[in-house]
Structures are given as C-alpha cells and as structure tokens.
Image (cartoon, rainbow, N blue to C red; front, top):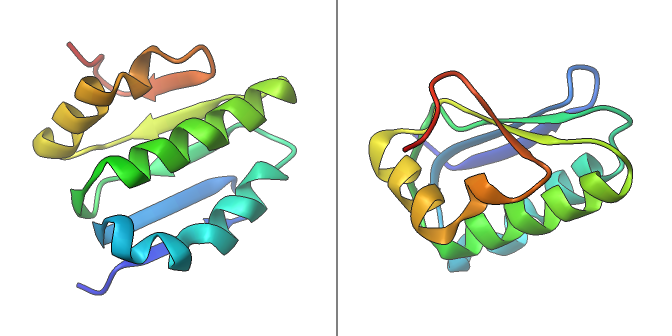
Length: 106
C-alpha cells in the first residue's frame, strides 16, 4: 500500500495510510496545513497506518494544539496496536484537544 496522507475538507477526516516517518514528513505538510484550517473537529483515520515514528505524533500534537486554539478537537480513530502503543508512549492521547473514537487507550 502506498503511503497516503490526505484531508477530506467536507467530512473533516485526515486519512493516514501506509508508513509515515521523518523521511515522509514533507509529503504530509499540505494535508496537515489544510486540516489546521478546518472549521470542525478533525478525525484522524489511522486504520490503514502500518508504521509511524515519533515525527507523525509530533505533527499530530501540533495540529491538536492549533485546533484547540480554535475550540476544536483532534479525534483519533482506529490505530493498529503498535501505533496505539506509540500514541501512548508519546502521550498524544493525554493532550487536552485530543479525543479518542472507539475504545479507550490504556
């Protein structure tokens, strides 16, 4: 599966697929920038993300902070177990503007 980061402005969904790391961070900038301007909460669909490193979590934390400044939230949906572990390790799920769709993280 190719890596894909796209933002659906109509539905407010940031879709992250494939593998994301420091080497691919430049290719996700446009989608993240557009998501920062969303007038609604942003749902991050992680169901098809196979691998991520801390650079993606940092980018999502920055997005969450920007959304919070506008009274919105970042909602995480469907992380694979190893991605969920990274979210927990980085503390992304504890940020004030981050909410979880589905089961709570431990």
